[in-house]
Length: 549
Image (tube, rainbow, N blue to C red; front, side, top):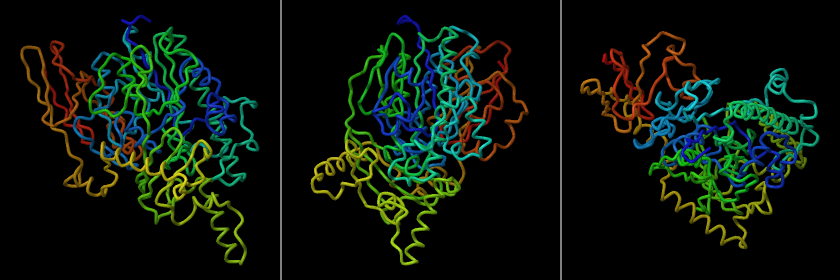
């Protein structure tokens, strides 16, 4: 690859895993249990980030940060399952790539708002760079695996066997050897769940290996930046949805032949939110001023040398569970501020309550209550486990991760750590002042601001200006993106009312038509009928406006 050759970019992504890959052995607790040869090889061929963090410990808020390059708390996407209205300057960053000529595909969205048709050339489970037509066209392709989603730990035996059919008997994980963290009971339920989680990670590793082999088969290895990441931490209690390392710390690997030296290790604090700025920089494009993320490396693959002192994050409403937690972490300590210390950590969550690990924790708590009722001392849980199941929690938490990687010994009241506590308090306050924190406002107030009449606002129809055969298109809605297509409307399955889950995830409503991004005036094909559509993030799309050239 020469400097004049546009770089291709492939993201290999998955749900709900921490840095539980073999390449993190000795870096994160429990990784000696992992079997991930393909991703381990990717790390050996490029860079492994040891302190990579999600901006939120749950999927949609985290993905909103990744696709916009901004903190969820700054743009209103922090509550799990909402339809936020980000400020008008915010864009989904693939639009900048499409404007530069990139072919952009994805298999999964889920950004807390409906993705406009302008963001991706293709959004399907089978979307691939091989569909771009012109082999010289640069591409940005996102491949997403659902094998590791928390729900797949708890499927029935037949479904689990199908999900992990690619594994050999040697690759399967022995529940008896599972490295159970101390905040979980050492029971068959948790050992089985951890082994299944790890089998799912290995099955995902096989899938990732297939994508890497496709790059090699197409002769694209040397011209492609590959980045692997997960959206947040493990799909288990006190991990996913909670702002500890188990919920926020991520595996993050990148390979860029000729640009990033093999076996590079980065220990600085980075975010998944940095991924968009990284791709734009690699493609030679400017980073919009509104983005909070920073490029992980420059266009030559060189570490830019900027170092964060802290990584920030938080927990907000999780479906029906009302909560607010904020955290600041440096390379040794994690500070957590609980805005509702009168509430339990382990709030009821209807979606997750059927999971065996959640049921096991509830059962043991109930059985200990029965022990008390029988005049016995409770002995089924440890003090660490009872802390997570208590009816209240401390207002502040402080953990020394160098000695306590599982974050079980709260040092907030320890006079010997008063200086660290004060320093991290100030850092968190300054972060909130700098970027804003909409999670501290009543959500109902935000909803009234976003939807004054109780309904999603509608983007204004695009306005087409014609000078000869040259078309200029504008929209009166501030922040709207505009798409255009030569494909006429058609009645397809996608025109029917979306399912509940599709509505929540917010895939673009393409109507089974291919939509181009309008980014500058253009000369229309003679005699063509063109349809235009505008959409601001968080708004409903405009009507399609047709023009006959």
